[in-house]
Figure 1 (cartoon, rainbow, N blue to C red):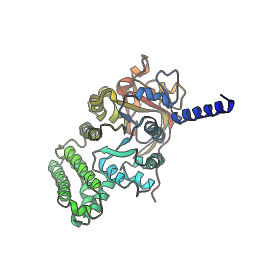
Figure 2 (tube, one colour):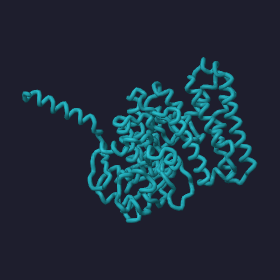
Figure 3 (tube, rainbow, N blue to C red):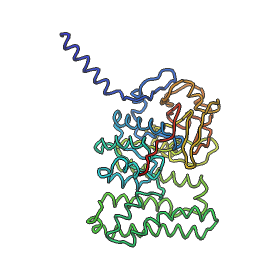
Figure 4 (cartoon, rainbow, N blue to C red):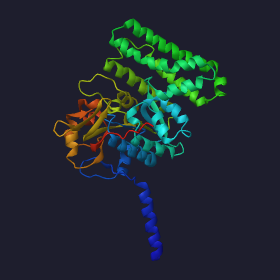
Length: 406
C-alpha cells in the first residue's frame, strides 16, 4: 500500500474516532484514579433506559451547563430521545406543539413556569433541540397548576367557542394558590370550597372540549393541543381532587402527593412509548434512589428505582463552592469542611466530573453519611452510594444567566 493511501486511511480513522468522542469538559471515572472522557460513561449506561440528571438547587448556572452537555452526550452517543423537565406537563406539552413558530427565547420561557430555567444555559439547550428536527423531544412531568403557558393557551383555544369560560381561565387556575392561604388561616371550609371550585372549573373545561371538539379544531388549535390539555386536567384531578386540609403547607405531605403524581406521569410517558430512552431533569431529592436518613418522604426516584431497577440511573449534582440564586436573592457558599461530600470530591482537583457509583467498590467517603446542599441552601445528610447511581461534581458554580425580559 503506498504512503498516500496509508495517510488517507489514518486521517479517515482519526475522523471517525473524533466523531465518536463527545467534546465536553466533563470527565468520567469509576475509581477516582483514572479520569477519562465521557465516552467511558457508555459502558455504565449501556442497559439503562431512564437517566435522571439532578441539581442540588435550581439556582446554579454551571450545573445547568454541565447537564446540557450530558443531555447532548446521551442524545448523540446513546440515542436518548426524550427529555422530561421538572416543569408543568401542560406548559411543556403545549409549547412543544408550537416549537416551529416560537423563537428559541419564547420556547425557553414557555415550556416551564420555573423562572430559574428562563436562563441562557437552558436556552442553549433549546437551540440544540430546535436543530434536531424533533428527534429530541422536550416535555414536562410536574403536576402543579401554576403554569403560565398552559393558562395562556387554554384561554386562546377556548375563546372562539366560549368567551366567558375563556376569560375565567387565568383567575381560576391562579386561585388554586388560595388553598395555601386558607390552610395557613386554618379555614377548613374555605379550603374545601376552593378545592371544589378548582375541580369544578377544570371539569367544565374538560366537558366543553369533549362537547365542542370539532368546533375547536376548526378554529385555532390542533388535536394534540386538546389532548395535552385533557391530560393536564386528568393530572390535576388525580392529584388534587381529594387533597386534604393540611396537605398543602406540610412539605412532607405535599412532597408525597406531588412526587407520586410526577412518577405516574413519567411512567405514562414510558408506557406510551416503551422504546423511548428518557432523560429526567429535576432537583436531587426528586430523583434519588432511596430516602435520606431520617426522611420519610417517598420521592419520585424511589418509585422509579423500584419500578425500573437497574434500567434507572440517577446522577445527583454536588457543588463545592459558588453563588446560589433563590427567590430571596443570592448567597455565597463553600463546603470546605470534612463533613461535606463536596469537600472530599474536591480533593481530586478536577473542575467537573461524573463519578459512577455502581462500579465504584471502595469503602470510603462515598459509603459514609455526609452533608450536601439542597434546595434554597438547606443541608441534608446522606450516603452517596445509597442515594444515587452516580455523582456530577462541579468545583464552582455561579448563578444562572437569566434571560432579560423585554
